[in-house]
Image (cartoon, rainbow, N blue to C red; front, side, top):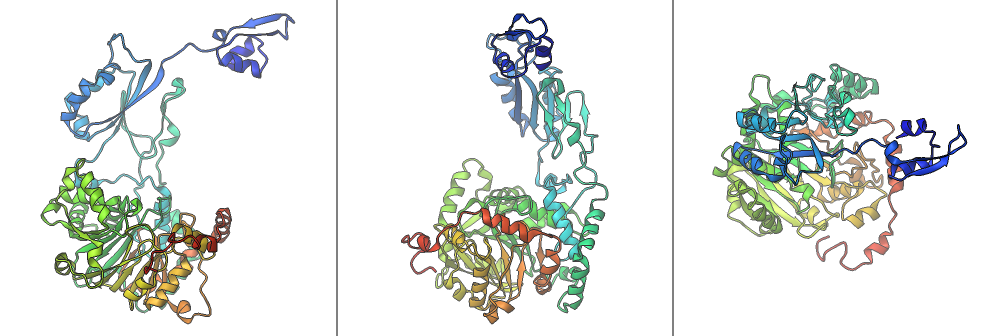
Length: 581
């Protein structure tokens, strides 16, 4: 438009807009001083069909027959002269299909029917649990992987090194004629059509060949490595991670997600994996992505001689119970993949004990209509049947499989919100708050806990926000730890405004608050009974990895809308239920 308009001496500005809108314009030619009329067709390119992209999900060859019969897709096949031909042109088809299906003769011949002008982009889905476990593609969550690697250089026992392949999508992506094998972060340009195709700038490796060395250099420069080594050498209870792997001490606690509400580039949504000394395990909340996060950790801690597939199978089948604290999606959506994965490897022969609010079971019953394979892979245990004094027949299974007993406490968050106390773990008595406002009843029920895992969504000074959203501040979590007389406090479920480490202000007038050991949870963090004490002492070293964060936190806090807590609490029944707090 611009180049053609200039050749016709059209003044730049509003007249060009008129031409772009398909109108004719009249003006005085600056060179001839004569009136001149230019029509839009004189400067605009010829009309072209609209851009078209088809996304095809074909898990089996049986689905291919339905795709072939699709009138919508058939309209784009070459040599078709239907009267109802589409007004757009098909430029690319994205194939979500297993590799074996895509490479079959029938599928290939179907692709050829669209002609050579159509590009075919393949995103091969895993055909089995084995394929998913063996997948070595680089994670597209670069910030999370780099953050995990930095923490691993601080202490690789507490923070296993993430699996970071060094060669991924480096421009040599497989392409034969119109077939393109997709890879993480690849970009395909659709417009303008003259530049249609792969964006070469995105066809580079997500991680450099010297990625780990560069990150280690950053940790050393920050002083975090030296401080961590000093702390570890002074921690008598610290035992090398190799000694935690013997058969008599398999207990571990892995955090798969430590953020609130929605995942961000640093933290996934809530999930924890609690393994007992006998090798069996349970999950405490299962946010979306929990299974993938676990696979990442398991691969990282696996001996080189061991099989990732065998370990994945063993660990999945070893999950005997799941606790869901409340029905918010960021605490349970990962359950669907867990049940599907276990079903694929025979998990229905040993169904999981699912301890959850009653409305979760209604959700799963409806979901089974779409994904029937999850049916029979769990047995229901209503959280309310674990109140003090209650006894469910499934408690016997928990004792036999895991050696534990569970007690539920109702807390204030959303309807059907609960905290849990688990006795008999490798850590001793473990209490988990779920999402909630501080609860004295929970503190009493978990008295003497060896480990308290408590949400700390907001920093101190944001109590009004915490009250409004029915969460806890860091200081309030510490208060509950003191009331509970907990031996160790692990903080988690941080607001995404604190992707690293939230600030802590202890009450110097409270002796307990000043002495309770506190650890900050991170994604991929792996704590064992012997490394728990060290985890509470490494915070100063970890803070060195995030210079300037305090200023960032203050800026973020200022952006939040101030709320009058007295005004909020004046609303009857809005923030607490009678007898719960």
